[in-house]
Structure formats: structure tokens, C-alpha cells
Image 1 (cartoon, chains in turn brown, cyan, yellow, orange):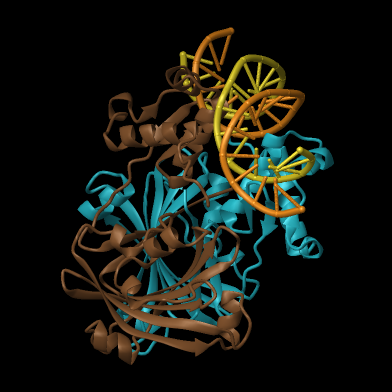
Image 2 (cartoon, protein in one colour):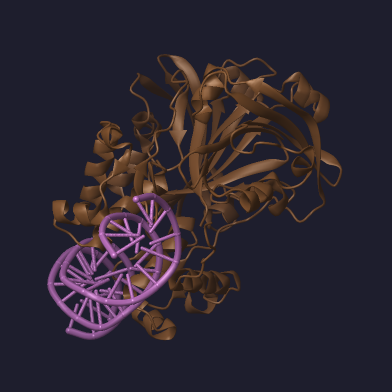
Amino acid sequence: MDKDYDSPKYKIVYNIIKQRINDGHYISTNNQIPDELSLCKEFKSSRMTIKKALDLLVAEGLIYRKRGLGSFVLYKNRENSSVLQIYDQELAGFSEITDNTCTTKVLDLELIFADETLASKLGVSIQEPLYKFVRLRSIDSIPFSIETFHMSTRIVPSLNIDYLNNSFFTFIDQNLENKIVSSQRILRACISTDIDIKYLQLQADEPVLEIEDTIYLSNGSVLALCVIHYVYNKVEFTTYAQRK
Amino acid sequence: MDKDYDSPKYKIVYNIIKQRINDGHYISTNNQIPDELSLCKEFKSSRMTIKKALDLLVAEGLIYRKRGLGSFVLYKNRENSSVLQIYDQELAGFSEITDNTCTTKVLDLELIFADETLASKLGVSIQEPLYKFVRLRSIDSIPFSIETFHMSTRIVPSLNIDYLNNSFFTFIDQNLENKIVSSQRILRACISTDIDIKYLQLQADEPVLEIEDTIYLSNGSVLALCVIHYVYNKVEFTTYAQRK
DNA sequence: CAGTGGTCTAGACCACTCC
DNA sequence: GAGTGGTCTAGACCACTGG
């Protein structure tokens, strides 16, 4: 079993400073964060540790740093809160990204044989048995997305429909040796399928945002392939990139 | 002026190992990469440096590492090469992400006053003068995307239309004190506008993939806001996320 | 147990910015 | 020149994996 020893010092420092940023703590200093040596003293740690903490904030786009000058908070605009935000960096399942009432309805659960495409994407053999299941997710009773999963039966020998009614990811995380560690996502805009139109209550000309999610476990294998169709005007996907 | 001293040792090691991965160098060892101490010897460097190099590969999703076991290449499927791939981590302009013949046509260049929304997104005052320009981009003469830029006139006091016909980003990088360092992107699926339909030669029910790009400079200010509408079936946006 | 990666230290030298 | 962040070292201890 992997243990959850998730509090190395640099993460603690990272979380504290992140909290301070969110609290507006550095507005009074013109958005400038204390220099590394000061932070070393405050947190009784070496420069490398402080730097590792701040590097996480840089990667998130919360701060930027400039040699010879200092480190500064980058306050960005968060608008449009009528639309659900999906963040690139969050692997969280659906239920964790909204406070509202979220319901899940399983539309389909069946067994199929892997065709060539699925076998390749899942890293299994052609003809290997797979679960296929489809879930309709709603917020405040308004349909929001349709998720189609494909997963080898080797991962979970017997899949109960009850597990699918709540957070599938929580179920996986609690019941598998290997944990979910990463996810590769491909985003596209798509014309709605008949199923989308029916269950997401769309007009014919209304598109969906498709996210094809390949979910990896800590042993490097693929847990599942998950294709999600979101109602186009109910969701935004946010990401942040830096020059390397 | 920022200097381009872009070859710290960890980046050199990163590039070499990345090349080896792409060359299939580690297939013969069951996808396993040599352990850190071996790499330290090979590259005559400390463990921290090697680790920093490998951490870049982890962040890209090219390898995964497991304590007690080792580091392993994660070979992923790249399919569908008929569709242009946009990678999350690349800040590159359009012309750098395809080998094909790419042309640019400036559809519009005008001066406008910043309204409240634009002022907020660009971090400028309301009523500040802005450039607005629109470019149609094509690959092999087939329309591909429409880009709409908004940028303060303070950034570039006089903007020549000639700069817009080629790589705008190259122009900026070569002529500004501050360089482009990062970009925040919001992705959505959208119903096509009349302009999209006209210039991208779409049918009425064909959507676009919208990317709203806020481009940051090394001094933390916003260079420009760039909204791109891509033909829905000609582009995919790929990203990789890890649990922290 | 030996081998692996994860974290951390206490320094060092360097490049850049501003005065 | 003083202050900042960027890189790098040579070690150290720890947690996890597999035999």
C-alpha cells in the first residue's frame, strides 16, 4: 500500500504561502513576496526547500519571479462564475469541483470486447473483456455532462453499479493497490451526438466540449479511458503554460 | 535585455534523456531508465541536478518514477495525425506547430477604447486605447483559425500591419524588453459566429473550439488577450495533469 | 537486505536589477 | 555594491520495493 505521507516541508511552505496569497497578504507590499533568505529564516529551512515551494506556485501561475528583483504575486481575473471551471492541474472527480448538488445516473453498464482502438489506448490485448459504462451527471437537476468509460475487467474483477452512482475515483482510490497519479487529456469541440441531444437536452446546433481522459495509475498502467461530453455553455477548461 | 543563457546542466541532461526516449533507447531495458547514481556518474553531476532534469520529464508525462523501483518511460499513443495537436506546455506561435505551409491574412486592424471587460482582462484603465486586430490563418490554403487580438498601445507604440503578417510572437520577442513567459488559457466549445462561418467556411451547425489566451510578459504584465476560434475538426488540445 | 527515489541541508558561485 | 533569484554540489537520512 502506498502511504499518504503528504507533508514534506516544501509542501507545507507552499500551502502556507498559497493561503497568504489568497488572503491578500502581499497586496500591502506591492504584491512582492519576501526574499528567499527571509523565508528560510521564517520556516527554518534551506534555500532549496523554499525554492521548491515557490516553484510550485510558479508552475501554477500564482507568482512570477525575476532574478535581481524578487518574487511577485500575479493576481488574475476570475470571472464568469456561472460557468463551471475545470482546472488543468486538478485530477479531481466531478463531485469535488462544485459545491452544488451533483447527481449521477448510470445510463448503461455492459461488457464488451476490446477493439483495436480501445486496446491500443488502454494498453490491453485486442478482444480483452472491458467494462463500458455511461453516466449522466447533473447539477441542481440540470444535465451537465455524459461520461463514457472503458476499463479492463482485470482492474476491478467485479464492478457493482452502486460504485458508479457515487464517485468512481474515490472508489478506485480506496480499493486499488495502485493509486491514480496522472491523466492525459485531449480536448475537442464536437457536434452533438443523438445521445448528447437527448440526455443533455441540447438543440441540434449546440455543440459539446469533449474531453478524452486517459487515466494512469502509479504503476504506469492505464486505469481507464473516459470520454466526457460537456454542455458547451456550462463549462470552461483552464490551463496555464510557461516557457521552459 | 534578458540574455538567452538557456543551457543550465539540468536542461542539457533533460534534453539528452528526452532524445533517448524518443529514439526508443530504453525499450531494451523494459522502459527503465538508469538509476540516479548512474546518471550522476555519466553526467558528472549531483543527484539534485539529475533529479531536476528527470522532474521535467515527469511533469511532461514522459516518464514516471516510483520509490524503491526506478524510473520508467511511459510510451503514449499518438494517433490521429490528420488533426493538428496543440500542446498545453508549448507557448509557441502557430507557425511553429506545423510543418505545412501556413499563411496569415490580416482581416482587420483598428484602434478602440478599452471597455470594462477588456480593461480588466488586460490590466489597463477603462478607455485606454487598444489595438484590435483579426487574423485568418490557413494551412495549405485551407482556413484553419481566426485570431482576435487586443493589446494596449502602450506595449508597441506603432504597430505596422507587416508585423502581423508573419509571426507576431517572434516580433514581440525580438523587439520588447520584456519577453513572453507564460500564458493562461481558457478553452470552450462555441457555436460559430457569422464571421467564423464566413471565413472558416463552416456549415451553420459546425462549432469552433475557442481558446482565450492571456499572454504574460516577464515583468508580470499582460501583453495581450488573444481569442482564437479553431475549426472544430482540425485541432485537438492536449494536456497532462498530475496529482500533487 | 541492497537498491531505489524523496527530501533536506549548508554552503557555494553566478547573473541580473537597481542605485 | 547590495540584494535578488538561478544553479549546483556533496553529502545526509528516510521510505519504499523486491528478493
